[in-house]
Image (tube, rainbow, N blue to C red; front, side, top):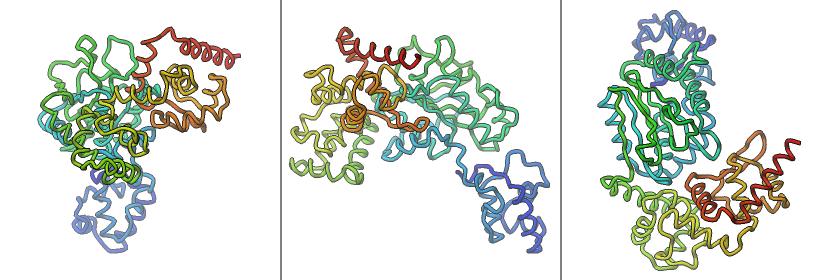
Length: 458
């Protein structure tokens, strides 16, 4: 939590603080000077002055230090150590996204300038799949502890009612909003705006508007057409044509877009991609040894490896997320640097062919993927095995050995479930299906899913 975040004293904390001040024979005014806080802050923590929003954490730290006690003697430990700004459902995602985060300073600088120059507004980051949009949001949220929501198509976490429920709870927890359990977003924002201390702003970060499931005709996620002053939204989405644009605002509400594909950002993107490659080959303990062996066995200079792989990546971080570990594990020991696939889609196609998916259509590896594609929600290994009509151990081997880097594994109601990791791979699989929709495997998968559902209903 930030030093500027607000906390409140507990019932025990009020009494203990009163005893400590009295024991040291301080007046409230004298003690406030010693702790470098206002007398009103002391009164708020003692409960003798109204304190609906709490006091800033730094003031509690100062007071505790002046008395030789701990902040948790004044504030309940669970409130002092809480991080209400990061909802539990997104904590692991944020941690994963920022683990190897590099660069993107130009994006943050542009957004900061937008916030500084405008009283309120929407700022949208646009980019193709794999350009790091989710990681940018995760990094911003991690550093600024902003309320956030990540739309995730493959987990069905992409509907307006789920977004509102999550954001509502985050705002209630952060700003102590009474009687707001059923409030809509404009009402919540108005309440928060009325509580913001001087100089503080509210930024709500929302990732992947393109993955939102919602009827056409209204703003995505029912985002407000008007915004109170000092309220901003940081949004990301993949490109779509103007005919499908689904964010409308009232006159006076500024909407700014930063398109990562724009030529003016090409050098920034290249620099960030190179920084990421250097980070992995020099610092990432999981892959740097394997990468070093591959590079040295081909007598390639580090600078040449970074430059050529950056060109092949086409400024796509998802490409590097797959290719660098694959090189480190020896999957490309039979290839030279020039023979590595160019771009994310060629990587998917190359991997598909190298695994024999075209040569041996209908094998279990392919069936498992299409079951995950058609089901569309995280499902356990035993359910996949039931649909495929094979032994669970065989499916587990496919999930853990063959497709592990493409799948997300998570605990759902005590069971380990699997779903497709990224929308770009989802798109690739859909394209495979659409190119040959009459292939027998698709009909078999549809039929097996239908039979499994009927059996479950029975």
